[in-house]
Image (cartoon, rainbow, N blue to C red; front, side, top):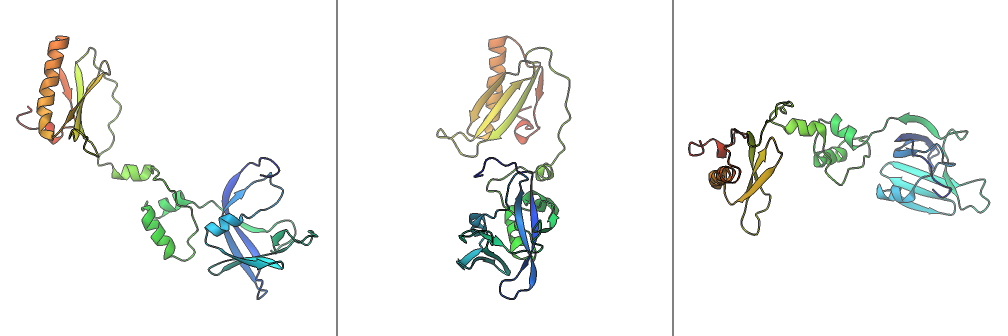
Length: 248
């Protein structure tokens, strides 16, 4: 801030009880994503933040009006400012504080969980067609939601296993993965071989799944010729490329 650094202790929603500039009636205005900064010497509203929320700004030397849908914030000149260049909200009660209530923080993560983990597009659609839906900030990047990740897992995660191989090539783990984009040399897949004892890994690029058998034979021969041993145990995810009669 202009007078130094102020700690942000929290963020939430604030309700302001204001007088309507035109009718003089009392109304409640909701401000979301309000920062609670105990070290700040004044309550400030960012004009740029309000413009980002589609508020329309009009005014003159008598005051400034911020209008959005049915809500209108009126900023009148500060009586203590002789130059009339500082504007503030005329709210009730004027003594001590403008707050009449505080609401717990409502953000994208909370609404995402409350509505049953929908996508950002579905939540935006809900916000447009539901009354009193809070104004939340949608993240630009896709964040990993633990609930969504668990819901998309077809099987439970394997428990940790304390058993390990006691010598090289006693147990080899193998898996086949596909590339999202075909390489320049027309490779679409990659097969991996991982030794459980040494944690050493080998990879071979493949152009088709049918080449898995040839790659496995080449790896077995490499181990036999270069290391003079035979693989004792073979671990895979039992995919179709590992379950054919020819592979057996």
